[in-house]
Image (cartoon, rainbow, N blue to C red; front, side, top):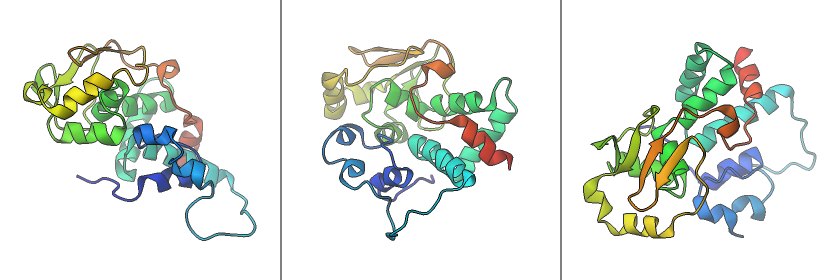
Length: 208
C-alpha cells in the first residue's frame, strides 16, 4: 500500500500552516510550524513571488497532505467529483471525508488520521460488525463503525476510550463513547466539514 513515509511535520511547514497531522502534539510547543516558520529546503534572502499556479498547487497539496492521499488517488477522487452532480469542489471534499480512516478520526476514536489509518490497516475497525481493513473505503449513510470484538479488550483501545472526548464530533456523525460505536447519520455537507481548504483553487488547478 502506497503512503507518505517522510517526516510528517515537513508537510505542514511546506504549506505554511498547521494541518494537525500528529494529533495532540500539534497543540504543544513542540509543533514544528510554531518552532520553524520557514518552509523546508534552501534559504533565500529574498522571498520568491508565488504565481497563481503556485497558490493553486499549494491548496491542492494541503488537501492531499491533510487526508493522507497520494497524487494518483487524489486525481481519481477529483475525476469522480467532476462526474458527480453539484459543485465539483463540494463533491471532492465529500469523497475525502467519507474515507474510513477520516471517519475514524472524526469520531474521535483516533488522535490523528495517521493513527486512524493504522487502526484500519491492522483490522481493528468494523462496519456493521464486519472487519474492514481498507482506509479508503467510502462509508455510507446509516453504517455503524466500531471496534472488532477482540480488539476492545486491548489496552490501547481502553486507553483511547478513557481519554474521550478529546474533540467535538461533526454533526453528520454520532459516537457512543461507552461502547465506541459510531454512526453515519447522513453524508457530510459542505457546511459540516471543518477545514480551511479552498476547493475553488483545486478545481482551477486541474482545469488548466
